[in-house]
Every structure is written in structure tokens, then in C-alpha cells.
Amino acid sequence: MQRFDVIILGGGLVGLTLAIALGRHGVQCAVVDPAEPAATMAPGFDGRVSAISSASWKLFEAIGVAPHLAGKACPIDRIWVSEGLTGSALDFAPDPDDGAMGFMVENRELRRAIDAAAQAADGITRFQPDKAADVVRDAYGVTVRLASGAEIGASLLVGAEGRGSPTRALARIPVATWAYPQTALVTAIDHEIPHGNTAYEIFYSGGPFALLPMLPGTRSAIVWTVPNRQAPAMRKLTGRAWLAEAEKRMGTFLGKISLAAPMQSYPLGYHRAARIVDERLALVGDAAHAIHPIAGQGVNLGYRDAAALAEVIVEGMRNGLEPGDAQLLARYQRWRALDSLSVTIMMDGLVRLFDVPGWPASLARRLGLSAVQRLGPLKERFMAEARGESGPRPRLLLGESI
Ligand SMILES: Cc1cc2nc3c(=O)[nH]c(=O)nc-3n(C[C@H](O)[C@H](O)[C@H](O)COP(=O)(O)OP(=O)(O)OC[C@H]3O[C@@H](n4cnc5c(N)ncnc54)[C@H](O)[C@@H]3O)c2cc1C
Image (cartoon, rainbow, N blue to C red; front, top):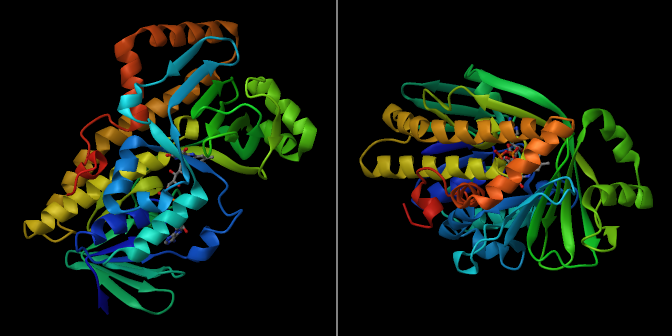
């Protein structure tokens, strides 16, 4: 049996990042994932873009992912939030000295960068494509028999398999879950007028319409949330008809627009595990919680998990404890529980607030936006959330070494 310190089931955006953070500190990790790495980086596999908060970017700098994204990320210098095209808006534009609020990155580039950093890192053994056929967790450790026949053992198992985590289900961890009656349609457009590194979030009852700057210049990603009942018809729209519908939502402030990518659609749901640890087990990323992409916080929440878990494990091992020690897992649970609860509640609240139809609700929202725009401290609080700078942050998210 091959032995490791930690076995991570799921080598996606969060799982593989955790392995890099641990590997850099001498923690031996096995990463198991049924997906062929080349397939996950191929065009068309994942057409989304992610808003990586400035705190998550510091993690990327600290663990060597950021250099692989040079020239492939667009700084977010401004965020514009409005209720339809009414003119009531919140305009977040920090001091240039404070740096960008985050970076927009195509998920394909993100996957490539994390893969390249993992290849360069020490201490990571990838079993990919492969999957766990049998998992035994007990007081003495973790043993995983893989579908390929290999047997691996470790002190700690990490579930990072995304929304449908089989590890979470096997551990019988209760999950609060619901589906939003909404679908996200994701594509990209070219436009005549440069976006000025601005992310636009235009709210409609039925779902927000987001325009996210891709590389500096005149290309933006669109995340268009529509009610499920409208999604099949929207998916069928092509060419001019689609552009005309898009212009109804975004107006003409970016000039003439044209489609720049095929459309992909994603059902939207919420879930939150009642706890994120069990005997010799920790959950990270979407395996622990998944939220509406309304404010682009999902993967950032996962990076906060990864940074906190890495810090807890590395410090624990320095003090003679093994990674699966119950005291370390209890510390991870305490650290992450409150932060992930407050972010998931806040995002769900935003979805519901902006989904209430009718003019009285719309008027209330417009007044609310104007009030926040005028109130400095409240606006600062929203900007800190967008940057991922709220709450007690793990050292990696401050750009420091563990
Ligand atoms: C439309 C949309 C837009 C979004 N935009 C943003 C954004 O702008 N910013 C943001 O922060 N977040 C965004 N998100 C959320 C973000 O994409 C997720 O939070 C993120 O992908 C979670 O990463 P993860 O590694 O936890 O899970 P995943 O990315 O789902 O990775 C899971 C991995 O586990 C593997 N796996 C599956 N089954 C098994 C198994 N049995 N054993 C082992 N491995 C397994 C998979 O192959 C995969 O590699 C968005 C989500 C959607 C739907």
C-alpha cells in the first residue's frame, strides 16, 4: 500500500489547489479524480469565467499559481450594480492605490494554471483518471482502494468532489439543499466600446444579468440568469434574435455587440453541509457548500476552505500532530463554519431580494442601492466582501507563508 499524509478525492479548482498549498510544505498528498486532466482543459469543457477575489489571488501568488496566469487575467477595477437599467446604481471603484478588487479568469485558463503549478509542486501524486472503489476511515487512518486496483492510505481524507460529493453522502452528513428555479446561460460577447475593467451586475426579477470583463479591451463574459421556464427558448435563440434580447437587458452603453463564444447552461442550486468534518475527514469547496453565482463568490469560498485547512494541517504537523487529528479537524470546523454560513446566507438573501417582482419591491431596491451608494461604511463593507477580505483570514489569503 502506498502511504500519504492526505488523500484528496476531487482534483478540481479547489481540491488541486489545496494539494499544491500542502505539497509546498512537505505534506504528501494523493489526488484522485475520474476526469482525464487534458479533457478538463479542452475548449468547450467549461466555458465559464470566474471572479477571483483579491484575497484568493494572494493565495495564488503564495503557492505559485499566479505566474501561470500572467497575461490571462483581467483586473476588476470597478463593479457596477444596478436595478435594471433604471439609473439607480451602486458604483464600487476603489482607490487605484488599493489595487484591483479581483481578477476575471477563464475557467479553462484557471484549470491550466492550477495543473501547471501542481506539476511543478513537490509532494503531489495524481491518480487521474481513477476513483475510489472502497473507502475505510477509522481511528487508525484512512484506506482507499481505487477502481484501478491500487490501494493507498493516509491520515486524513478530504472530500473535494464538488456538489454531488459521494464522500459527504457516505459520511451521512446532513445537507440543506434546494434548487433555484433559475438557469445560468453563459457566453461571451465582443463589444465596440472598451469595458474599462468594469464588472456590471444588472438585476431583474427572474435573475441577474452579469457582464464580466475578460482580457482588458472589448470582450466580456455574460452570465445571464433566466427563470427555468424561459431557459429552453433562450437556448434556441441564435444570432440577431439572441443579441436583440441581450440588448434589452444591457442597453447599448458598450456599443455594437456580437457573439464571441457558444452558449453553455448551468442549473443553479444551493446546498450547505451541516458540518464539514467527520472522523479523519474534511470537506472543502462545493462538497461543503454551493451558492448562486450572483456575486461570483463560490470558488472563493472554496479557496478560503483550502487556505484554512492547509494552515491547520501544516501548523498541526509542526507541533507533532498528524493531519487527521480530531483536534485539528475541530479547529477547521470552527474556523470555517461561521464564515461560510454568513456568506451563503447573504448570497441566498440577495437572490431572493432581487427576485421579488412588482414596482413597490423595485422601488425599495432602487432606494436601497442609492442609500448604500451614499453610506461610506456600508459601501466599504460590500467592497471588503468582494475582495474576500472579511472575517479572520488564513495567512495564505494575506499573501503570507504558513
Ligand atoms: C454559472 C456559474 C458561474 C460561476 N461563477 C463563479 C465566479 O465568478 N466566481 C466564483 O468564485 N465561483 C463561481 N462559480 C462557482 C464555482 O464554479 C464553484 O464554486 C467551483 O467550481 C467549486 O470548485 P470545486 O473544486 O469545489 O468543485 P468542482 O469544480 O465541481 O470540482 C470537483 C472535482 O471533483 C471531481 N469528481 C467528481 N466526482 C468525483 C469522485 N467520485 N471522486 C473523485 N473526484 C470526483 C470532478 O471531476 C472535479 O474535478 C460559478 C458557478 C456557476 C454554476
